[in-house]
Image (tube, rainbow, N blue to C red; front, side, top):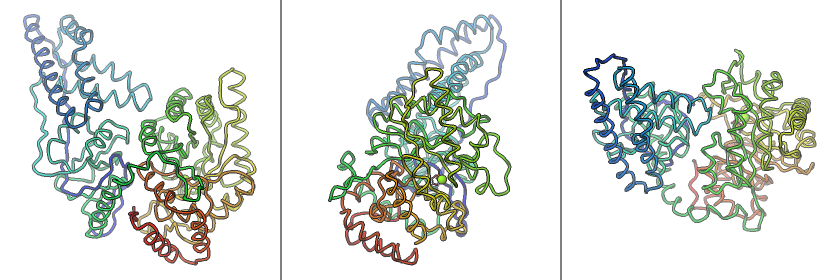
Length: 587
Ligand code: PEP
Ligand code: MG
């Protein structure tokens, strides 16, 4: 989630693709002023009018929400509009409202103070739950609270736009999303939130492109700035160049045509014409993505980035807190398998108490940090093991660079298993373990590593960075970050062969797996699994279903004999264009 200045005035922000689509237009920076609440004492003689202020405000809030509800029902259908019903229920809760009135009478304090204090108690409990879902619900409660307070204070919220705009905000409540959609909203861009925030879910239902979790969007963007947003890839370009705009326009057109066709294949198997099955799974980071990954036809979770749970945390979550999240994901995807990758912190990924390192990508990252902190590693492994009781969980270790690290990681896993067994806690005693191949030394040692585990998963994002000495996040060297560099392609082939020699399956979970230009090549190189972001999954499946394994192997053989990235890319483009003219490339 970093900001990168590309050519001229263009600034690119990377976030989370929350609702598909492309949008371009002026930004409208929506800063929702939170009502300020001060405590005031009231005279007993003012009590009656204070209670009346509260009741009027509550009634007005209910009316507003009913309007939003009926609008949302028309636009979204009754299922998705249910959150507003839930908000109305909070306002109609006689126990809550009774407690608030009683406290105003007993404490002789102003209505907005008591409303804020009483409802905040619930909010705090929900935020303390360390559960992404509860956090989202806490935002709903927050929204209701602010609505009543605003109405007590007789403030009005602006929600009318002058012409078409991309709404940019720190966060958006579901009600904001719906209300704005009555205007000419082109897209949503937020600092906070994941794919799973209600605002993101509603944007998908409303078919309004959205990019969330950008962290610094409101810092970089001013009202009136021209924005181009890519809700497929999770990018926002501020003051985009002509080239960016044209590229996005072409992409929008291709996707529109293609999406119509993809709907029909979502639940068909990912199988080539000559019946080679490829396990097509998803990379996700939050439990709320499970539903979307499943709806996109995902066969499993090929990469669950557990470190997402550490975002914004001052300390590591406890074993129980971690377990709650992993169990939700594992149960949500049951009976299909979920691969939990152990915390990959360091590098560009922040961790609580991270070391200050000169060169963090070559420092204490991934498995190195875990092996350095056995207490954190043990709790983490126990949490994953506990979520494996239904036997659909696998564990994967990141950033392995030698065999010794595999041995050490496995011995910690044995210890975690012994701990749980001695306490009689259920878990899968035959849990499958895998290693990410993302460091060149691990690729070279893939056969030996494969003898120790059940599967290998190639992380091309890092493998390319370390093989080609190109920082994956540095826009200055971006053209050198070449997925189709012959050294990369040949290394993938070497790892696949090494794994197969040792009878373990080999997958790929780097971004390359989700590049339609790479699909035929990867299938032909013999990969058993492709793990991709859920939004691209149907498209990759469509390619797999349109080719013969026999042809893919031939294509891979030719690519393996080539000597430059450009040569391979041009060759693959020409093959895709001739064999699969309907596939939109350059996603
Ligand atoms: C990779 O390196 O390819 C990978 C999938 O891991 P991450 O992007 O989380 O480093
Ligand atoms: Mg990686």
